[in-house]
Length: 122
Ligand code: FES
Image (cartoon, rainbow, N blue to C red; front, side, top):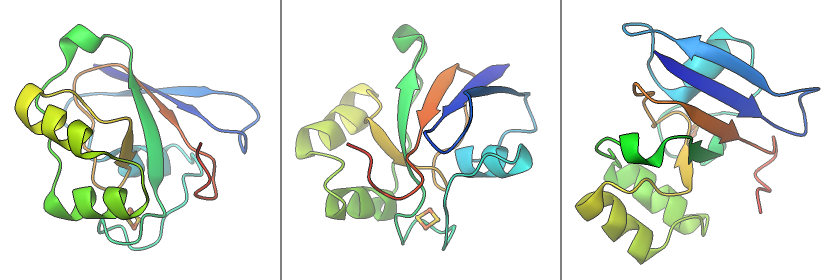
């Protein structure tokens, strides 16, 4: 079971949802299913609208990080990922701070997902 807590200034309070196996999909899919207002547009890893910050509550439980070339490129263009973070993700499975919600699949781990609602995350 994965607990996903969504936090954003555009929401009155944080919301935690439970994504059970077989019902996971991407962070964006889970957010949409629970009416969490993460902005999105292309839903295909190209526009960067769905940028989110992802924190792992139990860093030891990290599993392989699946970053596609497309996601890496968009995060790079947005200035939200460094070469070191990419290398760390690919070699050591250390998740980068930022992800595209439409490209990031929910795993069996508890995470905090923060978003601003207008691409202005610090
Ligand atoms: Fe366009 Fe996710 S909605 S990159």
